[in-house]
Image 1 (tube, rainbow, N blue to C red):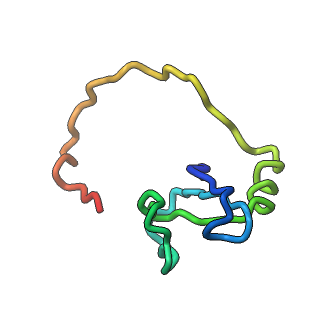
Image 2: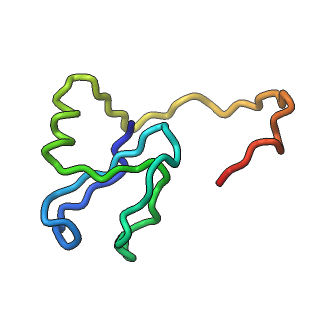
Length: 88
């Protein structure tokens, strides 16, 4: 899972929230009244209270990356899947 955002304005929710995306894909739905001034809903994202998010972080199984160059781009072979994958 990855924390992809937060909202501390309390304009939409009466408490601080964090937005977490997991790798399950589109298993849930966006809230019916998702704010129009927010970025688009990400499939599989959940909105959690700050307290619940803090429990996850304090579990000592979290990592943060920043200012990372990463690996150089590589040209990978096409094993025949190009054109067969759907992106929704």
